[in-house]
Length: 285
Image (tube, rainbow, N blue to C red; front, side, top):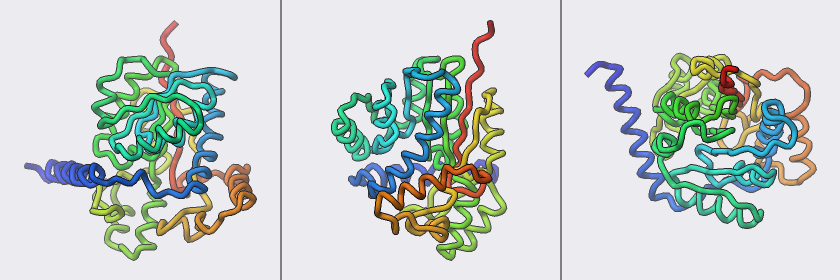
């Protein structure tokens, strides 16, 4: 076996081990509501803008939320009238997504499945929009996932994705004092990092790398935006600027949301996540 083959096998084994841990993790996620709401608002501002750019005001779309988690974005888009299907492998998170949808009085379809398997079973050109937020950077098979996403998008359809920035992972590891892992992030593009319950696979990106990945699939880039330029949470490196968990009042969170959206230099590489909106080429004629 080649060195590269052994490395890829290690990534897959780490993914399998973490999937086992996730399978027996009965928690839906311990993200505080105020933090979920802030990230949802930040993403939604860009998503709504890009949907209007692609389809016009008032468009109602068939949306697949690939890696929907507890349904924060799926429910938000269903409230706007879109038809939404969410896919996730974590049953407790899907249960929370159902409860969230019930509280919001909207209907969303939820599928418990491995993401790549579910996408492969989906009909070609069956979705107008695919969301894939904060998912791809933990998947060794991210290229295959993206190929399947492109296949199920209708001509002219949108992929709205976000990935972890190199800056975020580097600053987080430095804050935790894990210098060997930080050096790996500074010099390589992927690897096993000690950020989860056990060392897990991560792929980190610059904005240019995220754009190139989608351009190589034959997709047109509509926008590239930073998510969480000025704040973080818990142990992550961005929390060294401002820990969002220290802000509890609506007024403080509203102010932070406005600052994030202000017409300042974007610098998407210097953010927690890099959001990219890309459009599948329209059919000829």
